[in-house]
Length: 638
Image (cartoon, rainbow, N blue to C red):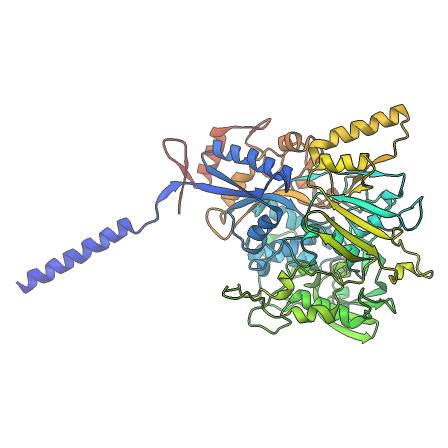
C-alpha cells in the first residue's frame, strides 16, 4: 500500500511538472506595437512620417497604434520615462559626430535626455565610441567611420533624413539676417537697424514652450537652445560664415570648421584658451591607436578590440580658459571662475554628490563628460583636465554658464506633498526658472503663457564695450510672439507685425514661400521680404526601445529599417526639402560606404517607389528568426 502511494505521488509529481512545462510559457501572439510621435501642432512632419511608416509596418503583418503627444509630453515619455516601443521625431544632432557618444554609449542608458534614450548597450560599440572620443586627426576620421558603419549595422535608431531649414524675414527694419544662424543667439546680434536704436525686434515663434518654462536644463521644454543662448553666455561660440551657416550642416558649406571637419570657435565669455596635449598621447600619435586600457589595437580589425569597461581613462590634455573680467549676471552678481567650475560640476550631477542617486543634467551631459577635473588658476582662469581629444574636449566651451548663487540652492530632491518623486529628481531639473538670471546679451522682462516672451537688452553685457569687437544686441527689446502655425507666422511677417520667423518653416509651406520670392525677384518688387536658408545638424529618425524584445534584437531592427523608403518619405512628407541619409551626420563625416546614392547602402528598402514588397518583407523577418501565422500576422513571444 505504501509503495503504491509512493508510486502515485511520483506519478502525480511528474504530471504536475509536465503541466507546468506546458502552461507556464509566454503566449506567441501577433506583434503589436505603438509608435509614439508628436501631434500635428507639435511637428507636422513627425506625425506624417509615423503614419506612413505605420501603414508600411501594418502591411508587413504588425499591429500598429500611433500615440500622438504634445512636444512636452513626447519628450517626457521618450527622454525621461523611456515609456515607448518605437518613436518618430527629430533629433537635435550636431554638425560633428561627437554627439553619438552620449547618444549611444551604454553608460548613459539609464540617464534622461538625449543620453541614450534607446537603452542600447553593446560593449564593442562602446569601444568604437571611446576611440572616437580620444582620437585626433586622421585617426579620428577613421574612428568616426568605424562608429558609423557599426551604427548602420546595429540600427539602434534609423536615421531618415536631414531637413532643409527656411525662415522668412523683413529687411526694412533690421538687416544682416545671414550673419549668424537664426537658431542661435548669433542670428539676433549685430543686426543693422535702419531705425532708432530703441527699435523692438519682433520674432514669431511657432513653439509655445519658451513662454511656459525657461529652465536651460529642462529637456522637455528646450529645443536647440535659442532662448537659452540669448539669456546665458557660453565660453565660446561657433564661428559662422557670412551667410549664417556652420560647417557640415549643409551639403556644400564648410565655413566654421577646420579642414578636418571639426568646428572652430570665436571667443565669447572666454577671452582666450589654450590646449596642451598630454605627452603620452602626443607620443602615440604616430604609433598604434590605444584603447582606454592602454592596449594597442589595429583600427582596421575587429578581432583586436580589447574590452575593459572598468578601465580608467588617462588624461589626453588640458584646456586652459581665461575669462573676460568684470562680467556680471543680470542681477548684478559678478561672474567669475567659481561659476564656471560650479556649472561643469553641476551638469555632471545636479545633487553635487549629496545624494545616493546622482542626477545628471539631461542637457549638456555629453559636453562635460570628458572633463575629469577643473582647477581654478585665479579669479578669471581655469584649467580643465580632459579625457578626450581636443575637438571633443572643446565642446565644453558651448555650455551655458549658470550663476552658482542661484542654482546651488536647487540641488535638493524635488518634493510635492503626498506624492512620491522619482529618485534623482532635483529642483534644478523641474523648476520653471522664472525669472531666469543669466549673463547673456538679453535679460528676461515678462511673458504671458502661450502668447509672448519679452527680453530686454542687457546693457552691461561685455559686447557693449568699445574694446570688444563682437556682435552686440542692436535692439533694445526682443519680443517673441507665439503662433503655432507656419502659415500664420508667415502672414505676420508679410503684414509687418513681425520681423522674422525664428523657427524653421514647416515643409508644406516652403514651396509657396520660395515661389513668392522668385516672383518678387522677377517683378523687381520692392517688398522687403527675404527667405533665409540655413544649415542644420538635426535629423529625423525612428528610435527603438532596446530595453525590451523584440526591439533589443538587432536583426529585428534591421528588417524594420528596410521597411522605410527614405527617398519616398522625403518627397511625400518634406516636399523634397530634405536629404535622405544612411548616417546621422553631415556629408563630410559620412564614410564612402554609407554615402547616399539613391538608396540606403546598408538597409535598402524592400520595395519600389514607396510600395512595400510584402513577400520580401515576410522573407526578411523569417530569415531573422521570426514567424508568420496563416493570416499573414507577424508572431512574437511576449
